Length: 78
Image (cartoon, rainbow, N blue to C red; front, top):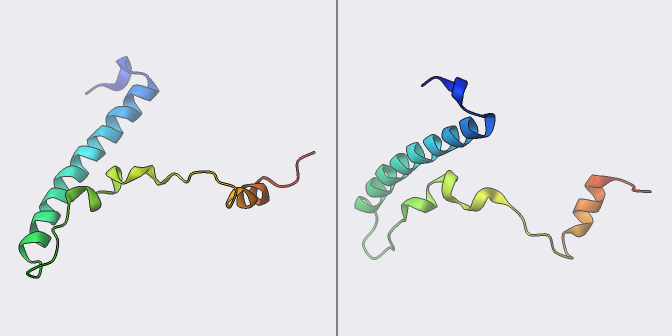
């Protein structure tokens, strides 16, 4: 595919979606192997739990408890 006709945002989006599809495949196979070999009575593993591209993006909600951490990173503001 020639990238000339696409914007930077479109190329990044295509790359991210490709990586997500590849991880979906890897997570499904790994999940299947883990579930086949799991101990009797243990709950099954879901593919999304093994897929880093599907685990919420790693964002932290800003609360009154962690605002001090953000203030410390920002330094002194006038």
